[in-house]
Image 1 (cartoon, rainbow, N blue to C red):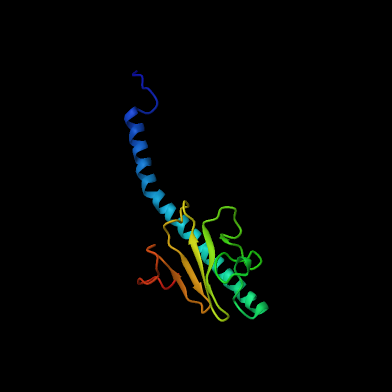
Image 2 (cartoon, helix red, strand yellow):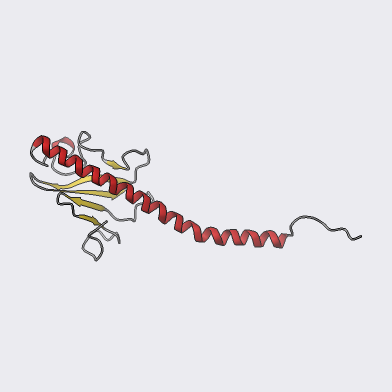
Length: 151
């Protein structure tokens, strides 16, 4: 009767590790893309809530002016009006929220990805008082390219 050793050979283990490595190298970028998309969706929700907060501010003051910190017209929103970072309900922030412009009749709000986060190269999001939504999809600093006039 021949004696058989039980277990795996080194070649079998190396092949298994190689297959796992190949699968991981395919899955990880897809997973990271999913995470970036989810965080952008969080920022979009925050922008819609920010727009609602601006409408409440106008109802109370009859103008969009003065909603920024210190009663200014542009910049970081006053904490009473809306938080300055998104997502609003998380300790991990990925976007800075600002009022780009405001007047008595109109405003433009922006969510800018925070440097050093996974969102840093995702491009900024904007929404205006007329409901226009823009996304600097290619992160070139403007929203004038095709397909950048919508989220």
